[in-house]
Image 1 (cartoon, helix red, strand yellow):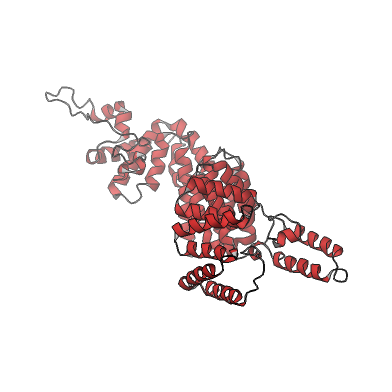
Image 2 (tube, rainbow, N blue to C red):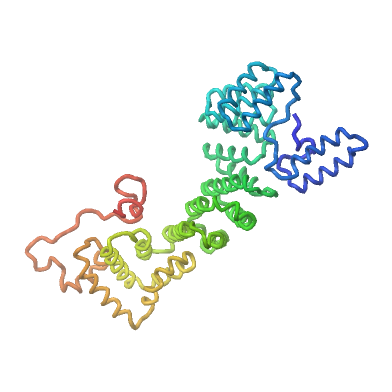
Length: 463
């Protein structure tokens, strides 16, 4: 069962340049004068492939039908398939296979019709029969793998995908499905290597096929995150290249793709190549959506990425992280509480002044949007001559707000400051027992006591 690639002696992932070279080599061997019949076969194969991977045949080549009724039924099947009339497509396939069991192409079409109709049980049974008729047929193995996957037989599906891959399946639809099976079976390194084949292809992408490219990047970013991350730089570099070439086609896929980036690339090594590549990607996306309604969504995703990067950094202390948290997590809280949290944290920052100024320099490099938020107070913090006045002003505000919002960090972390303000410890000389908070205060980065599995700061702390 020859395909256009086999006629030209090519691998299924051959580039356009290789296709052209193979065609002219074959034409010199089988010229129109010396072998007109073979020349026409070569010419048809070249025409089929020269426009790019989107023009690959959807079906294998089967022996020609000779029975008039079989030909008529095939035309009927293809007509219903083209019209996307799924019930009639399925019914005509069933009837054709019942009448002509010697023509395996009707069984092949029946399996695809049953898959589209979500009749997964029947599809698996017929796909197994199909594969048994020609175990070396890559198209049949591909259908068997997809049927197993859709039925939920993940181990059988992975084995069938491996076999279909060994037989030469390399079309994008197959590679994406195969990578999905790798993901289900926690074979992330294999899944990454499979999807890398898609983004490495030297081909022209059309608007209709660009969705597959976006799916490949999404899968790569997710699975590479579970592996060694050795391909992250290549993935981001290829994404940046494709954004430059196909930005208009990729436009619909960019917002969800940025969400995947925000989740998967939160904290690569500081000053790494990957971080610079991500910054270039963000710049390219911002230019693309400069005057679009989605610009606000894009900015929110990028802002979230930078915040998560800073929040997960081991180089930034909890005090500065709490300060960033006010701008992100508490931005919709009560104004008085925000004022208290801001004052509480700023007083702690004054006590940790040297460390905070050093960490602010890291924020400036690693999370530029967040540095813009903290810069006004950082500049005040750096002024030696005005620092006592700044602290006195903040303490005045804090004394007014603290009774309304118990549980602040400043008095708990710096009890001497509280005694200096009060004049004495609250219980000294008091005949009554002091008010003591016995309940352990949950750390912001600890698991939430509610049992959700999330960090406290991302769960009940917001409430």
